Length: 419
Image (tube, rainbow, N blue to C red):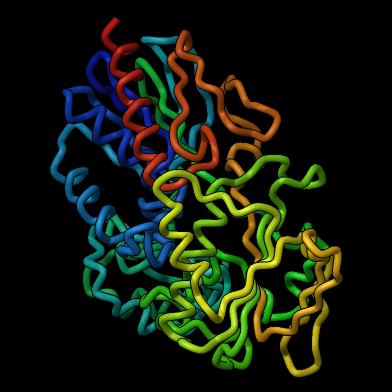
């Protein structure tokens, strides 16, 4: 085990998504040393998986590339990918944190030339695209990945594949003997920006996710619509790649439900309105059906909603979906009760999109430190202990709110570090 020392007042930021990047940059740019750790092989988090932000509908590269450059240029920030917090000892102003870095099996000689991937015969499910396509066992996490370094899923690599990628690499970057590395750091405060995961759709048995490829999630639609996604930006029905003539959006899929997530996930309505724009751009005459409990688009997002609701080929049905029936032709029928008319609605569509909720990542695992978590798994900041939450680790929020939250967290961490 090794020790990594920063100056007095150093801050640890746990999580390398948009919230963690923002908190790290705001903290470092006033002079504090920052340790930025991310459990995945690259920074960017969920934002990197999006096709566009709302309401401006610009791609995530707009913000992430700038932040990546700022991180690279700031010598106060030390970055660690594939790294998790294992233990936290001490107290505010003097925390000793044990970190563990999992092996990437590709060293810093890697130039991301891609020769290894071209030579690799082994494939594995592409987690970045939610399993909608495959990647090679050695891969670049995504086109904007920072760092631009390949990673190996060793469990998917055959002996023949190992020989092939070693022979293809001109830079001696393949190291299949890498081992996990443990090290400790000393920091004054910790910002938890551990982000969120989409709520597991198979838990809602009535919505039949996994039983038909025509039933997808809102994050899967984001990846389909992205030019770098599994379909090259085309929204088509998985399985047979059928063009879309009709599509249903099922709101609050797991949210506002005492059997699943009791809270409103905040972003699902706006995500659906955004994805309606994707569909309309590709299919001018497609029928769009939105089944909802309430439509929540507060403040500045009201005008965004008004434009989408004025779509002549879009229908909005106030009613919670009770069932989805699988049809022989590959489509599905959505069943709901119209809460305004008390009529039973059955609507056949080519594809159904489940607007799954946001679940805090630490709500699914044991926290590596003594953190205050609410009943849903969100982190409640403890300023006396210099344990500060940011972004979607704090509450379900959109990107703009996350960056504001992360700036506030950075300011508090700086105050604590300079007592």
